[in-house]
Amino acid sequence: MTVTIVGSQLGDEGKGGIVDLYGDDVDVVARYQGGDNAGHTVVHEGETYKLSLVPSGAIRGKVGVLGNGCVVNPRTLFDELDTLQERGLDPDVRIAERAHIIFPFHRVLDGIEEKVKSESDSEVGTTGRGIGPTYEDKAGRRGIRAGDLRNPDVLRERLEYIVPQKRAVVEDVYGVAVEDLDDPDALDVDALYEEFREYGERFEAEDMMVNAGVFLSDAIAEGQNVMLEGAQGTTIDIDHGNYPYVTSSNPTAGGATTGTGLNPGVVGGGDVIGIVKAYLTRVGSGPLPTELGGVVGDTPGYEEQGEGENEALATRIREEGGEYGTVTGRPRRVAWLDMPMLRHAARVSGFTGLAINHLDVLAGLDEVKVGDTYTLDGEEQHTVPATTEEWGRCKAQYRTFDGWPEFDPATVASEGYEALPENARDYIEYIEAELDTPAYALGVGPGRSETVVRERPY
Ligand code: IMP
Image (cartoon, rainbow, N blue to C red; front, side, top):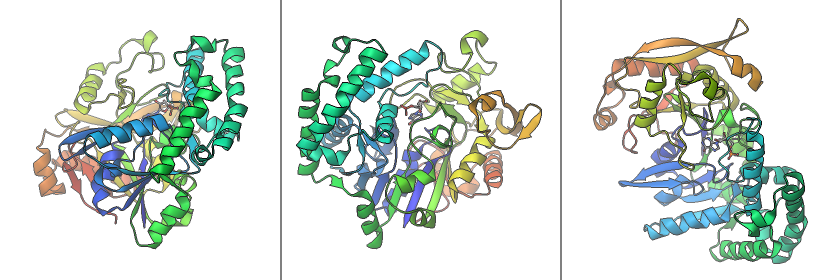
């Protein structure tokens, strides 16, 4: 059977920790979208691992699969694998033959386009990893897939088709001289061919390439437990997020079928767990109706408005929660929980369970607020409007909860749900009721053991 893990907000909800928590019961962990824009931190046997591409289960001895819906930068993948090996782990990671490859020119184009957009204040605030340009080439039917790296003739033929086009875009559309780039080889067919052919050889030598749908279906047929691990979150889904401030893939549960080759019946037959951070953070631009503080360059209008009235509170939560990007190190924007966003996420993905993380970070506050509904042009809204312009005009209507005191995570985790302060339980029960979904797990500290586990999905 499968369990699918979906970020219900804007990414960074602590998905890696939940994947890791249930990892004991899992045989295979497959990622279904995204690439090295993701960042997950896993604490395992006292060691902290920061991963962006390797599925988190792979550090716990599970088979990790990068599904066909992923975009894979082999430089990052092999860097991470080599580092993990140096730290004494031997991760078993497979890559779908149908996964698209991120080339250095994709990163170059990501950087140039963001810079151009920033001149009109319309940059997305991407991670700069070349994600969007790679998915563009996939949709444009000119991308190069992992399976193509195995065949040098195909690789060269495809590079000879695509690289001159990219060079023309860089030089003629954006007016950037290729020789002036930090990495001029990013647009050199011969250099790319040599480097990526070697990656293909290494994929082969290490028996890493699989037909993901077949591999995963066979595993399920043999009775193995498969976890489908989403990266990013619902509000940055290319279809269901706040376009254009989105990533270029589908982190929602539908992506778990198209991005692995498992049919919707298989994914829908298992649990779909929505990961919720007890508050909200955002990396990059776009609306955030419950925003508390701001981040220069990311919060719309921040420069003109100056600091928000709740800046000190935002800073406290950011520091307490370590809210800095795993991949980029950027400070995250901090906001109160946004229920319209969660209702939207629960509907799109059909959550059967929730994991609510970071309840400890809010401990010690006098009161905790939740954006319960929005008003837009005088109308009450229970879910996120489809246009980002309308969403940007939504005003959060707050519901206030009494805060809860600091607690010892280890005691709460060992004694269970009832050991949580009563006000924290009220908060959790409100979320469960609004989403009509039970909380399977409650994160009360950063470590794997600092979780109240109420349900094991396998
Ligand atoms: P891209 O995925 O690098 O193209 O970035 C597109 C948008 O998604 C930007 O707003 C990023 O900050 C955001 N984003 C991408 N990956 C993550 C993630 O793992 N966590 C949070 N935000 C992300």
